[in-house]
Image (cartoon, rainbow, N blue to C red; front, side, top):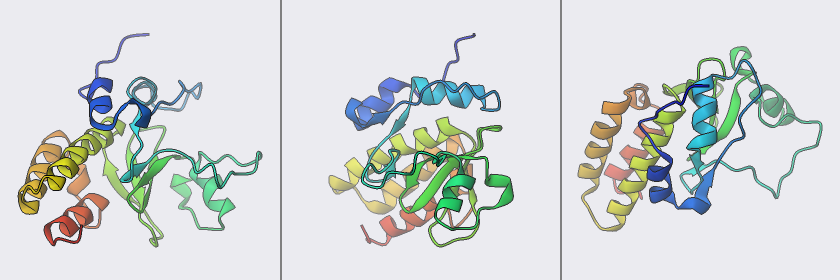
Length: 187
């Protein structure tokens, strides 16, 4: 197996969130799972924070018979409609109030905004999602140090947009909505 090099490293993720807030995924034996995504999730991981919750809620365990990873099974469990094409996608966590999932075949990241019946393409891949989360953590730190919110928003859009334009393509994406709240002093 060839070694895959990523632009985002586990060191960057640990520096931003601390080792105790990184969730690593076991290498998947699923042939249909995009190898690059599987490698990234097992070697770099996902952060766990108030902005992006990547862990299951241990207070609300699922029945042993439930496949809580695939969206179809999860949505069926809660009695919610699941778009047919997304039934096999895997849940990664929650970004603000949106459920975030990966299409295991393509590696594309999608968000299911709370209260919506559909989904939005959020990132080209899991590496882009983690890159944005690292940059957002920097934004949070600077916000706590009273840096101008409009400057923070513009910097985030520029830096993340240079890596992947997808997060800002849909005006209703969680990234656009959160930056709008930042600029209007809501947080």
